[in-house]
Length: 386
Image (cartoon, rainbow, N blue to C red; front, side):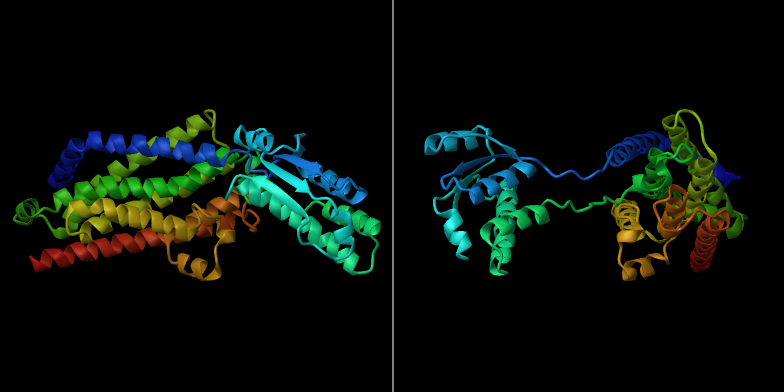
């Protein structure tokens, strides 16, 4: 077990860096969970809008009333200095001046020169209210052009635009993740854990293995009577110890975050994360076998972990990804990990079924087996080439 002992000694020297990375990523993971587990309900912003009605007709008053349904009306004098002061100090976000003759012009189908306005240039608030006013005028003009009188058009426009459009924000809260059986925080935790664990293992494990693969260390090992299979097995065993410690730390954090208990679905999520952690370890060892030097590990870690996370639905829900992206993602293990987690949380359209869930985890295990088979072949090929 000389290789195994040497592996642990090198890992021990890198322990401070490893603990620093794990700590930083735990903080990052907690931030992801807290920022995404909040209520994501959509709510339109209400602005402070001032309307100066110079026309003072039923039609102009109807427009003012319509604006007041979506925004807070703020009274203001028709004085340029006061208007500019109101905008500057934030008393009002938008000032609309309805010109005299508004009702007469619009009843004749003329929509030019109906208003003047004051707003902060290139601000979203200005565009927001501009669009609202333009929508109202366009709808009102369409009704008048259709043969309705001005009063009829005003009534129909108010009725049409008062209808609320249902807005759905797609999030874990839409599914079963609000249940006590699999809380939303846990659903997010295990979702983002795939990215964090993969990134941590590539950064830490690959660095240790590259140290073991240095020419002087490798040459000394090859001079012994130890077979390449035994050497590789001991490296994998040493990697298993590091992987187990890192995985236990993340699961312990999840256990604490969930109030010191795990439900049945949480335990299934833990099992899913365990299998994916083995896959991540295989990826890290494979990268170490192929990487030319340790300086490139950081770059490779970012490319692999971020790329796989974006393609497989860790950061963007799989239901929102295109078919071409999902077709490519099926050849990556993180896709099956996320799909299994989505089934537990109820976010996906798939109803939870233990057989389907285990099949997804089984596919991850197949990826792990394939990775370790490739790793053994690469190490044998390198040994024979030396």
